[in-house]
Figure 1: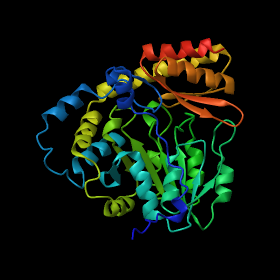
Figure 2: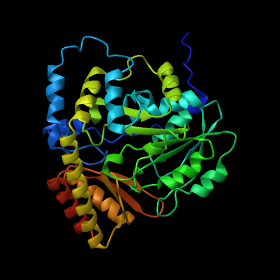
Figure 3: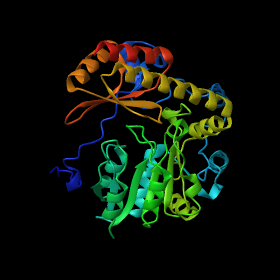
Length: 359
């Protein structure tokens, strides 16, 4: 007799996260080289990693061995880059793993997590998967967080507040004074700085004063190694120790370790590529604003968030599909919205042309 396998009751109707189509799939379907895809829907770096990364990955002779489970060399380089102590650094398989591990470490069944949409969806998804309760505090019309409402909503059950800064998908920045107000309540505040290299002010100076502060970062954006999945967290050394106890032994692979170390050391490449992306972001924002038909949110990320009419949204979708261009689309209640990852100049020009033709 075959017994039906039961899953958690609360996950039976689970609406899983639907990721964008991968560059690999696009490359196969279009029959073009992967680096030539116009994939501008996931905050990836169109320029790719430092040439030194690929060289080091090819030269490494130790792939047959497990990596150092404490990742001492990588954590040392990150500590120098971020100007924190080595004991304050935790590394992970992308920023998503840190989010999940933090909630796994802290939440009891029914504990609350404050989420401020529109923002990165992993905060919501990971809270539910770790049997927490999501308390939604929507952002204001200009996408700033409602600090007063957040502070009033914190209860004995509230364990974590997530703030993406610069925010994904809108690109706006939360001032440190607002973050400090929430930190003073004593609740853990996770500040996600995945896009900090492109703008905004880091919360790192607050780390030593507030042990309830956790900063989450990623090497997927500025370093061009999204496919290797490398993130890191900066936090009180007690929390680092606690996370080290519950992570899988070799959660970051050797290739990601090598790529992370080389990327951080190659500061000249990083500064050059980040400067190019920021210059292009400003140029595209100005061009779209001049069109007068879209509402542009000032961005400090490597992407631009614009709002359109629903009719424009559908027309842009079809035009992008016809031209094999991938953007991130949002069908909102009263309008459409588009997040455009800043690509290379020729790619950005294609997007601007499409937007102009939809007016």
